[in-house]
Image (cartoon, rainbow, N blue to C red):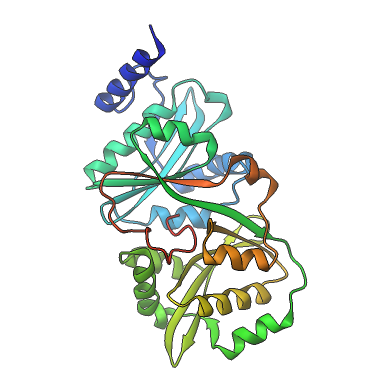
Length: 316
């Protein structure tokens, strides 16, 4: 049977049967982090992704999201994590164990999850892929956008003390629960829609630090520091309509956390990309081979995450 015809048959079968027809017939189960995280973590480490249980907890807490694991013959075969922003389903990550690659586990894992997202009211989808998985997501009907994100990192080192001074003069400070509504509103202005549940989940985590810059009591810039593996932090959720305030905030963060490794999935070619480059951030070697992350969309996503003021990966 010609390859194109075989692929067409598989796509039709997957759409109609949760991917089980012509598959390896794994057991696809709802993810339970208390039960499954140890196996998930092994695959994250294998693929050199620095994500922690706290990252999955935030995704898992979002209304409408769906996440599954696959098991076959009593062994852990892989996982697929998603969450939702309104009626947009975001496909966080799928990893299949090397022992089961090529054994038709990914297809039922993917289609079971997408079918349940649709039942939960999802009308469109967004994903970010490395070069390795780009071809597959394209075959699934996603459209590649022009937006990409580059992982950059900075190892612990001495930082010019003037960076901290600049931030201090501009009222850079950790934020608290009393600032929650201002954080939600600024995030919505940059991202393109309110994400109350997402922000509240992050601000409730002890492992996540929220920093902001205020002028006359009004929040003008915010950034998250989310814990990552090996005592590192990821700079995330950068929101500001003023490049100067964003620069002051990032410089202050880098100075205050100069004793730990810092990383950021920065929007390629953005203003923040330039700031991080000047501060000494560089692309890790492993990411040079698989990056940058490419953004893909399916359905009418709208303006979420499309604005020119989006400086970093705000979806995951």
